[in-house]
Image (cartoon, rainbow, N blue to C red):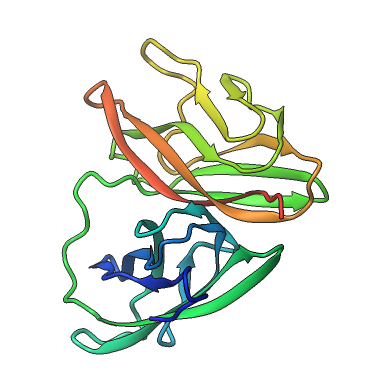
Length: 248
């Protein structure tokens, strides 16, 4: 654990850790140990031994304002291939925050022990988002990675953002909404069976597009929800990080 200043001090709490489907899932508490708020707090890099990082795909991850004696959680996934069960590895976060008009950075360290593998989560949604950047434009493609017989169809994508944006692209059969500064939400417009615009297992859907006056990117929290066509009910939600405009 490391200090940022005498009154504003950050450290790592005890992470939650799971070994699932060949991946190490960590939920890491970044803790303000002091009384002074940490403003503009961002995660700039993360390492776990020599493991390959799977998510976030890029940095920074903006945690924002962290009040004194409080914590914010940061989720990260690594490949388990280079890590031994029962062994301890050094987890290192590089973080930064605003201090007197300047940006101050520090490394936070903590050893974690790799647990035994557990079965894959029943009913978890297997999907991902790819991003293509071109100047001030972010183009997204949704990928439904479910097997053909799963019955889980992707029905929405939500992005948390912290920069001004405009929705400039939405696929046919979907609807987009945003307040222009804190969130973007796309959803299929289907309300009745057979839900023709839901993204079926094994397929992908492009045409989601954002524009911003800012050209840099950050990794922001995102959620993809699903609809179980076999049961005609809501399915699981996948949370991850997706690149969005960044107001540095």
